[in-house]
Image (cartoon, rainbow, N blue to C red; front, side):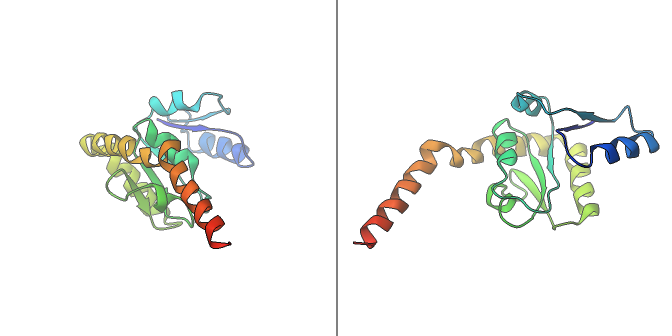
Length: 148
């Protein structure tokens, strides 16, 4: 089943489309939830279909729960987080057919999905504060020293 969480301008359009295509039993729209990690842990795949992302925190959140991600390779974000074919899958920006194909690939290949999920949980640790803060500290120190 496809579960979509959150609010937005397209919710009414999605509801109408789901009704028209008679997908009510397989495609479910949900309100925003306060504990999204709980929903990630109940998932098999996370899909990010954004045309633009900053960092893509939702990818890191899903990966930390051991969920492989499928995402458009939009500017800034997904390719910095997902290691393609290792812990998730990147798709050419706005290529909807390829996005669908890669989602189906993970649905049909449970072993690949599980392996990618384990790798995702491991690889996303590079974004933990204890790993990122020394990099920020070094950057600021180098800027401070270079300005003297």
